[in-house]
Amino acid sequence: MTIIVTGGAGFIGSNFIFYMMEAHPEYKIICLDKLTYAGNLSTLKSVMFKPNFRFVKLDICDREGVYHLFEEEKPDMVVNFAAESHVDRSIEDPSIFLQTNIIGTSVLMDACRKYGIVRYHQVSTDEVYGDLPLDRPDLLFTEETPIRTSSPYSSSKASADLLAMAYHRTYGLPVSISRCSNNYGPYQFPEKLIPLMIANCLSNKPLPVYGKGLNVRDWLYVEDHCKAIDLVIHKGNVGEVYNIGGHNEMQNIEIVKLICKDLDKPESLITYVTDRKGHDMRYAIDPTKIHNELGWLPETKFADGIEKTIKWYLDNRSWWGEIISGEYQKYYEKMYSNR
Ligand code: NAD
Ligand code: TDX
Image (cartoon, rainbow, N blue to C red; front, side, top):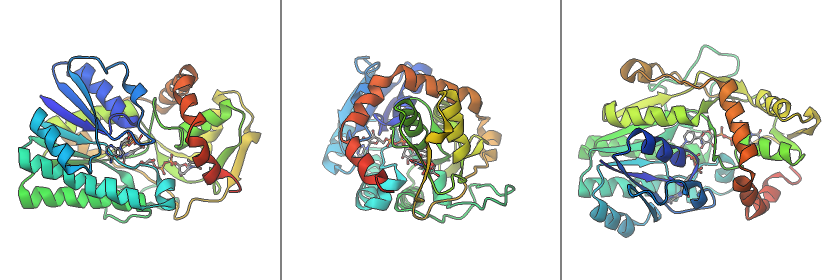
């Protein structure tokens, strides 16, 4: 079995590669990644020279390059993680989100049609369902919840999902889609809530909480997400959507306070800043379908997952230290100074 994993130099894609190379040592894994600001080749150093692994620097929008790779490798499956993934960046400038997340997805699926494939899997997000009110804890996103997006990011992801379903219906492409809640764990880029707060705490910098910090996210440890995708691509039905979530809703402010406590830093570092435009209030996934059909359940308790994550950032300062000392500085200044 040969699997192309796109976006494998990013957060979830790299964790998926590590997971798959352990779980299926007989598979060949090809990582296709453009190495944008969010992709980091050093993340893959432990697998880079394994005989059943290949890294290819390529943009998923590059049709000729993608077709050439398919011709060479004849993959059995494609798992598409490649995306522009940060909501705040999409609010600043949507264009690259439309290019990579929509056009890139169509190029990959065209290659799958042209060369034949047993499965194309689209890694999507709970953000395609919009948000839920804070005062209705009984409401959860199911696979039947209508698409109702808020940000350019979520709109681009929803567009890709619609295209994937259309390729299944029109061309019979064996497509599956998973929509996951917020992930956390090792190798997450420090622009996202949890690693940003850990990195700022460790540098005694202010902790910028948007609005009142009451927004709720449903946190899932990244390895549990990887296990779910492994199940969906092997045992899930084509033409189906599977929601993946941790049943672990928490307010942003609770998370930030917990990180302060764990790192023994004062809560006085917390600074309330101007809210994100169009900020979704609450996400909460109902994972009943994947549980009933494929037997998946999240295995990592939040208390254990966050402890492992904080320890990872403490033990791997050079990984994120390099990132925050480069281009990222300019981004941070632009997004957070005078906010
Ligand atoms: P990430 O930003 O950490 O990584 C994205 C990777 O894609 C990077 O390695 C980047 O170089 C690569 N990439 C970007 N544009 C590319 C292009 N045009 N061609 C090839 N490679 C390109 O993202 P992540 O957090 O690991 O998310 C991975 C996927 O999971 C995304 O599709 C995202 O929408 C989805 N998702 C993420 C979360 C989360 O909590 N992080 C939750 C649900 C779904
Ligand atoms: O500095 C911050 N302060 C803050 O209060 C940042 C970066 C975030 N926040 C808030 C905004 C959100 O309510 O924390 C929450 C989480 O923010 P992000 O880490 O940016 O994640 P989110 O916007 O929820 O989206 C994530 O989950 C779904 C991923 O980035 C997406 O790729 C995924 O689809």
